[in-house]
Image (cartoon, rainbow, N blue to C red):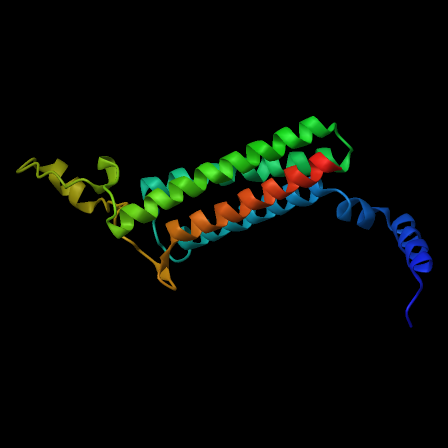
Length: 190
C-alpha cells in the first residue's frame, strides 16, 4: 500500500517524534561523520595491533608514524560526535571535522609515501631503509645487534590483492577524509 505524500510526511514526523535518537542521528551530518571516523579509526588501530601482536608482523618506523592520525581521530571523532549530539555551535563542529579531515589527508600522504618507498619509487628515510653498518669486531655489542630484528620501511611484510598495509592505510585515510569533507559540507548547509 502506498501512502500519499501528506500521509508519508506525517508518518515520518511521527516516527521522528517517537524515536528522537534516530531522527537526530539521521539529521545530524556532523554526528554521523564524526562517529563514522572514530569507528573507522578504532577498527584500523585494532587491525594494526592484531597484525602486530597476533600475526607478529612488526611495524617499521613509518608504520608507527601512520598510527598517530588514528590515535588523534578516535578521541577527537568521539568528542565531535558527542558535541554534535548535544547541539554544540556549528563553528566548533566544523572546526573538529576540518581537523579530522586534514589529519586523514596528511596520513593518506604519509601512507602513499610509504607505499612508494616499498615499491622503490623513491628513497625512504635513512633510519629505516639505509644500509646496515658493519661495526667489525665490537664484541658483545655486535652480538646484541645480531639479535635485534630491524624492520625496514622498504620491505613489504604483507600484501593482499597486491596492496601493502601502507597502501591500505592510504586508502582508509582517504575514505576518512572524504567522510569528514562530506560532514563539513552537510553541516555547513544545515
